[in-house]
Length: 134
Ligand code: AMP
Ligand code: ZN
Image (tube, rainbow, N blue to C red; front, side, top):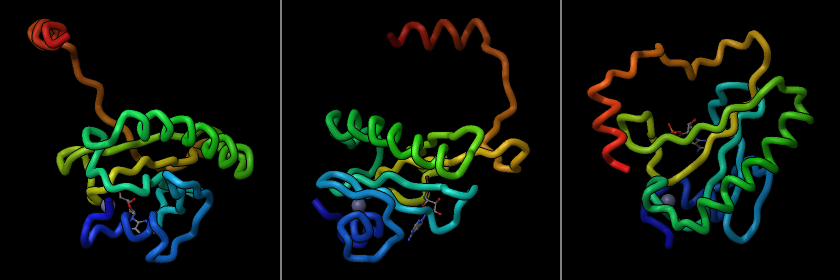
């Protein structure tokens, strides 16, 4: 269940101390060490899964319900104007720690947090290819 040399396994299971906001038998929620904004938190499952694709469905379902609860407390308590849930899967997507985690990033009007992209154009060719997958 614990992956050797996985820092988030060690943090989630209390082997390495962390600023813990919440803990139950399945999850630990901690403050990010290098926050994008005040209140930036991470939801960590206690059982190792590298990313969303390895995460059991039951854990994935519980993670989003927990995110809603924690996000509400952060938003109200820190008077945030909004909050982003960010979850990176794979190096190409910006994942740097390969133990599933969900970012909760409180947002404040006019802040300089950058999770933006340049909007592109949906081509007919791409649309056809993608729709055919489902
Ligand atoms: P990601 O790029 O989605 O893999 O995010 C990894 C996040 O983990 C980053 O926001 C880091 O700041 C954060 N992080 C890495 N090591 C620690 C740590 N020991 N304690 C808390 N947060 C950490
Ligand atoms: Zn792990």
